[in-house]
Image (tube, rainbow, N blue to C red; front, side, top):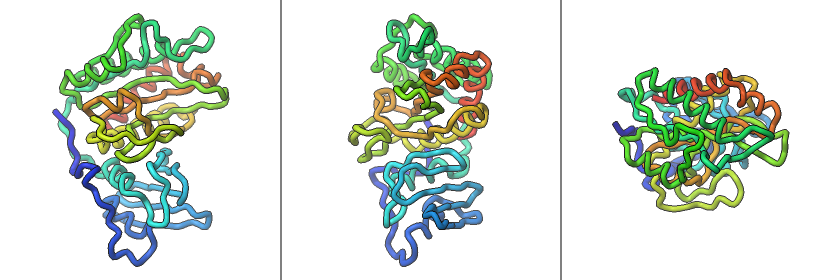
Length: 302
């Protein structure tokens, strides 16, 4: 089964602004598909809140961070004088439209980042590759228990899999979703929190600096579903682990996101360089809870 949403390819989308004589956000509820109780509220500090269909999106003109149903989402382009950009409008519409009623079960590739001689980040005696594998295996068990078909890119700590091979594994199965599990690191020990990454939209850079646009990537066509999964997973993980910080849904040209021919997300479950996050990520009960939350997010998006 291959997931489809009722959207045109991003490259064919056109921003509808003709005939707008009012504010740049007045038609945003319509453009986001909000038909039930649509509303736009502009606050004194400049933020714009758009609501409808039980959803709330809060934007700040000139800034990329937004909130979508309480979850931080980094826009591809900061809202400007003409309002929210084309790519973000269409991706958020895809993420927030009513459930398309996808048949289950899904085929899900679960990727434990790093492995073998590649330990990923390492703090004291804690290796990222081990944390990734523990959470990935717990996620696989949870998904299989719910009836989904799961393919693991690696099931053992000593297994080395290249980035190219991970995308090939996804391509060799009827993959409905690719989920890559990682843990983060930073020079600043205070940096902490959960992030979920999708590929940037065509013609847009990533959230981080030095991530220029890359055209013609296999993952671009699947961005509507990737965005829908990413937001649902981030929301579910924060609900399951209230001690975690929300670092948001972000965008990067990671190879597994670029080359996977299916909806794909990469999850940074926390920062091993932060003492609080490290305590959570090395706790087996928290690993299981986070894995179950990822599964909850996947199913919430369907």
